[in-house]
Image (cartoon, rainbow, N blue to C red; front, side, top):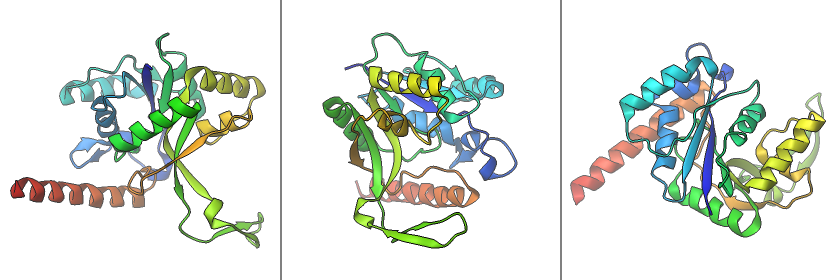
Length: 239
């Protein structure tokens, strides 16, 4: 199966506050989006990568990529749309004809691992669609618009969706086509497939596979990056 990864990184990052979009901010000395792309570049199961970027940052990204070097799988740079769903759709229209499986992964989830990518791809290959997700650890309350609790939901049935989300190409293209025709916008790719009545298999996600969205997320990511670096130094020193 030929597998392509669409990496949406076209958001404005409003929740991160003023400054450059979060995906281009430096984390441990390197832009977040480049760290994400490097994971997919090094993943043997990925054949091609399509970053989706803001139109006014294409040249900036190209310069970043040249300075970083080592990218051979990036087949196209795609201009993003108004919303995430539009951006992923733009990526779908630029896929090579031989692509069978499509991986969609947030450009601001740089701590994804090869194991998680591989598990999602293998599950989608077997079942047609797969989504990384975490089981809820806290008690989950359903409220009304005024903030009054209406119900306590069964925690063992609640999962928090992450990315990667992987689909057979024809399935994802049809889901996006239907959503576009009906003017429907979902919060992730899986929601578009779900509304067609298609089953999606969950894959156990990873706690550190966070989406860097807020200043608090960025602080956590800095601490985690520093911790990883220290661990690597200690491990290499023991060899």
